[in-house]
Image (cartoon, rainbow, N blue to C red):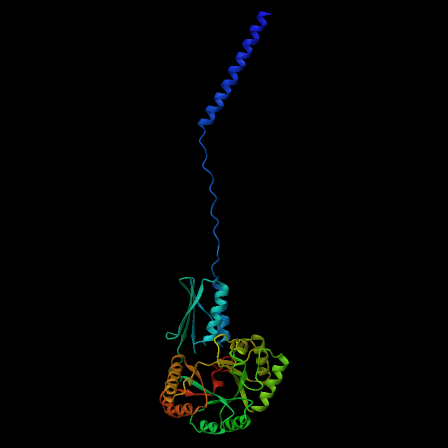
Length: 369
C-alpha cells in the first residue's frame, strides 16, 4: 500500500505545480498587454448645402420678367461662380426687389440682396461672396426721363377739378366713384385729354376708426360682392383706363381679395397702379401674375400741405425720374398742391422731363416700360 500512496501524492503535487504555473503565466500575459485607447466617435457635422447657381438664375429671371424685361434680354454672363446681367432701362420698383429678396431667402438663408440705386446695381451675396450682379444701364442718349403725376381723391369738388385742368400739365386724374361730381369730373377730364383712373376705395388697417367711404371693398366681402361693387364703379367713372387704391393698407395685403379685383380689371381692360399705402401690399405682384399691366407709385407729394414742402417733393420726384428714367408721384387736390403744381410746371419743362400719363409707365404693357 505504501508504494501506491507515494505515487498518488507525487501526482497531486505535480498537478498543483501545473495549476500554479498556469495561473502565474496568465497573470504575466495580462500584465504585458498594452491596452488600446478608447475609440473616439467621429463628430457628426450638419451638412448645409449651398445655393445652386441655377436656382439663383431662375429666381432673378422670374423677377425681371415680372418687371417687364423681355426674355431675349436676359442672357447672363457667367464667369466661374459669378452671374451677371446687364440691362438697359428703368430700375426695378421697390416691391419687386422685396419679392426677389423673399425668393432668394426661400432658396437659402445665406442669400441676401443689396440694392445700390445710385449706381443702378443689385448685388446678390452668398454669405460674404458676391454671387450675382445685375446692372441697369441708363436710358439711351437723347431719351428724356418720364414722370407721371396722379391726382387722387377727385370727385367731390368740381371747382378744384377745373383749376387742376387749367394747369399746363398732363396729370392723371383718379376719381372716387361714390362722390357727388364723380361722373362729371371724369367726363370733363377725358374731354380735355387727361387720363382717368378709378380711385378704388379699399379697407385700411385703421378701419373702422378710418373709413374708406361708401360702397368700399373690405376683406370680409365675398368675391361676388367685390365684383358687383367694382361693376358699379365702372358705371360711375366713365372713360377710366385703369385704377389705383384709395387707402387699402389692409385690403391690398389680402391676396384673395386682390385677385378678385384684378380679375375684374382684366375683364374690363384696365391697368392697376399700386398706391403702396403699406409696404406689405401684394397688389402689384397679383396684377403681374394675372398678366395685368401695373405700376407702383414712387412718392407721395403732399403728405405735408405746405406749398414750399410740396415744391421740394416735386423736384425730388423729378430728380428720381432723371436717375432711374421714370417716376410716379401721387398728390391730392388741396389748394396748396394746386399752387405747387402751377409753380413747378416751368421747372419740369426746364429740366427736359417729359410729363406723361401714368399708362406710359406701366410694367407689362406692350411697347411700354
